[in-house]
Amino acid sequence: MIAQNKKARHDYTILDTYECGLVLMGTEVKSLRMGRASLVDGFIQIDGGEAWLHNIHVPEYVQGTWTNHAAKRKRKLLMHRAEIDKLASKSQETGHTIVPLALYFTGGRVKVEIALAKGKKEYDKRQTLREKQDTRETNRAISAVRRRQRSA
Image 1 (spheres, helix red, strand yellow):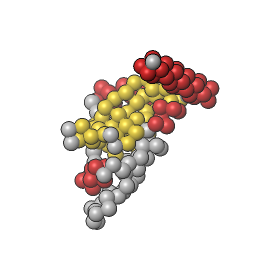
Image 2 (image 1 turned 120 degrees about the vertical axis):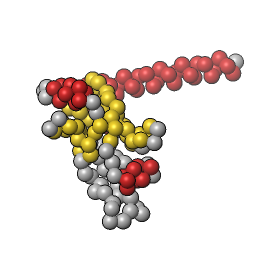
Image 3 (image 1 turned 45 degrees about the vertical axis):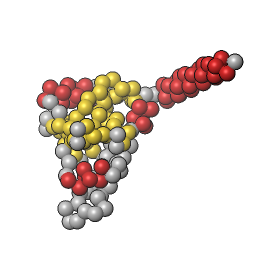
Image 4 (image 1 turned 135 degrees about the horizontal axis):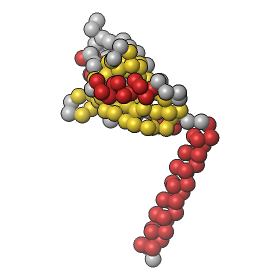
């Protein structure tokens, strides 16, 4: 795992996820191998039948020369035509967007997990946080009871 976008899961309801390849320059791959990237403000835009990843920050490679890459350039996603067409039609609906969730290596290649998402309202975000907190407290109580049973 190189980078995750935890903010996306908080701000959006994830409807569908896809795994895509990414067209990168050599210095970008080297920078990613050092584990440096940020997906926080990233989004995907369908333009001319191609999917483009915007606003992800891959810092310049420290030992790069004049061949170094721009830190916030747009990057092409490698997807099947049917997937791109489906995402394009769904993202046109009100409130829907396409966001990157994770950036990782699979078999030496960089992959990005993207999601078709719908924006959450403020009360939905609070409800999700409350549910997470309730399950965390429940799990703590269960593990405390089990510890007491083992020690007795």
